[in-house]
Image 1 (spheres, rainbow, N blue to C red):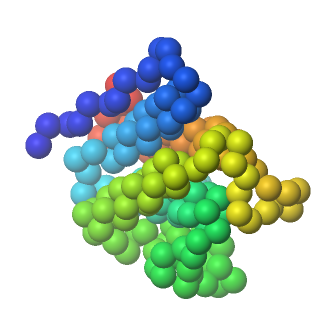
Image 2 (image 1 turned 45 degrees about the vertical axis):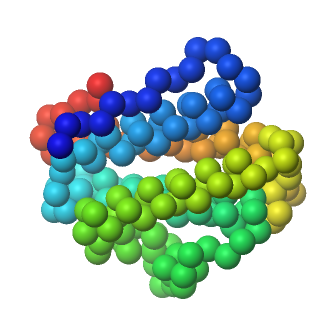
Length: 172
């Protein structure tokens, strides 16, 4: 199977086109770092960190559900995430991801992104506030989208270093 192309980032567009375009680009760039690797390769870490590509993908799957489904829409997390024991393992979503096959890991990630898209499309506007508050109050959808772009961009950097250490592959 050929390596998927990265989506183009729109140069011009309304707010939704640009924000969702950047988010979709970084989602694809992030997953590209795992392209073609097997489960053992996805579990490789760089000392002294415990981060691996599988742990990062598991984390971002949880981030998608947490921000869009839980906080923004006020809906329950999927059972596999709602039942994690955070007291026993503060990185439970990452630890869980390491146990999944590559196909399971990717399917969960894609399901979380698809779920997030349904909440973005269903929103009244980017001014719509989150159903659940944080410590300092509610977030609007615009803030959540920008936060996710930032989070993906940061983790793309981590993923770049891990991938290069595995087989020399560097970002396109």
